[in-house]
Amino acid sequence: MLDAASALTRRRQIVRIILIGVIGLTLPFYCIGFFLWGTAPQATRAATETPPPTVTPIGGLQGSITPTLTQTIPLFATSTQPLAPTPGQFIPLPTSVPPTAFVFPTSTPAPTLTFAPTSTPIPTNTA
Image (cartoon, rainbow, N blue to C red):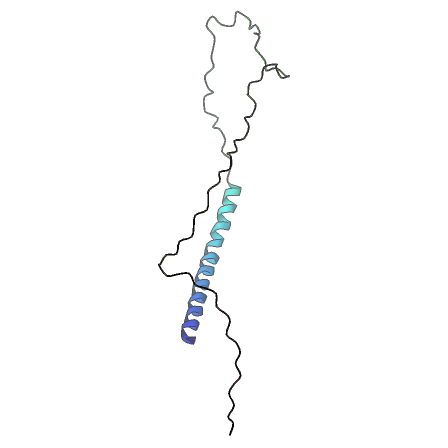
């Protein structure tokens, strides 16, 4: 029994050493990756890139743009309610179920109460 327990603890110790070794060996790569990510040059647009096309209205800019009226959202509530009131909660009426009579699973009669045994004196050896 002692050999099985010591073998189990030795196996656990070997697994812990291997996992700590993997963590220790990969940690420098994470540090180097974060350093390179932080010091990487920012992506900028190339100077030779053409600007996006513009939309010119038909007929040029001869007319002026006139403002149009738009409907706004009212700040105050209106007289009509969009939602109906919340309906009441349905609570069903309790139903009474009459209890069923207990039926013994076998045809033997139910046990009856008996009196507890009485304490009788221990017989003595009389000569």
